Image 1 (cartoon, rainbow, N blue to C red):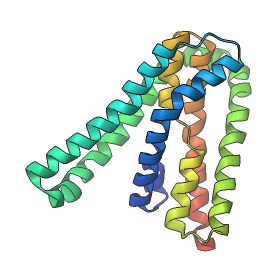
Image 2 (cartoon, rainbow, N blue to C red):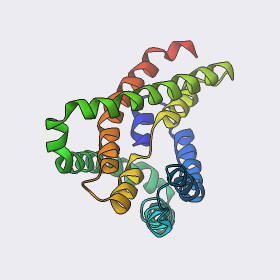
Image 3 (spheres, rainbow, N blue to C red):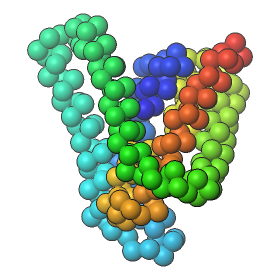
Image 4 (cartoon, rainbow, N blue to C red):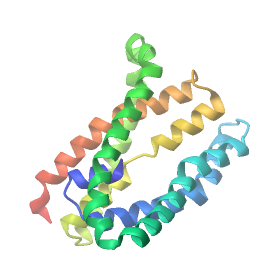
Length: 210
């Protein structure tokens, strides 16, 4: 999703890709400990097996698959074909997959979203504040550090974006599909998409500031 936001904001694709890679590697090592710590703070049992399985499937597996598939494609077709043909083919596929995932998630929680709008609102408000706070803080620091727009925009968008895909998987595995935790993560996606599109628009309108 972050790659999509960076692309829409017309940021530096290389910068976005490197930051996404660093972010994913950080998650690979810190998601489990942080998840265990937060569950411990809430005095909940820490299901380490479920946390490790979530990380393996939704973080480690895509990283390994991406590395080896890139290596094999370049070996078979060459780097020029990979950049000029394959990546352009992959972009619409990733957007379609994202839309399909969102439709699937909302279909599971559609009834609750429609029948309990006040509950959704109470979940949405802190998520909205958090996303905007992190974005504007990062965007402002990028300006102070004199980064150009192409680097500042994806940096702020990556900082503001949340890993709801992994959060949903973890919540479902630990608490179940009908749990409040699963609902919160689905609402997170519901809020994140329009908010991130709003922040992309903010980036494009403030491009002249950099």
